Image (tube, rainbow, N blue to C red):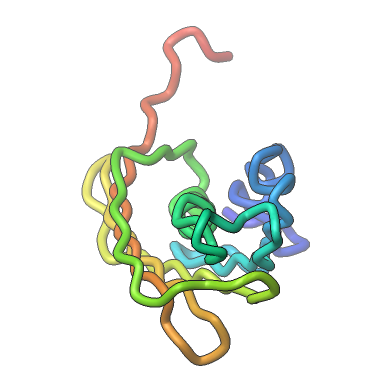
Length: 139
């Protein structure tokens, strides 16, 4: 259940996400199995070909995926993910990752994330999630 100010478990998770914040990733929205996150490509993210390193694009998509699957509330982690890089990204590009829940079944889920630069798709990501079982010693 969401909090009165529109926050949910995904917002709480992102507040503690040191890695994503260190890269300048911004949470735009997260609710009902969907999420949007943004990141500007910096010089520190470029590879030896002077294009954005794929690992950073993956990390942005993975962050949007995590936000979407945690927007429901129970702690959910990645069980796997894969990405297709469609276009190179460059220093200064503002990337936006839009995650959508495809299905949830039991404790598992499948999410698709499209990474955009303006109106161009630069990458497609599919993530598989797993909701953690409540800890027996929690309480």
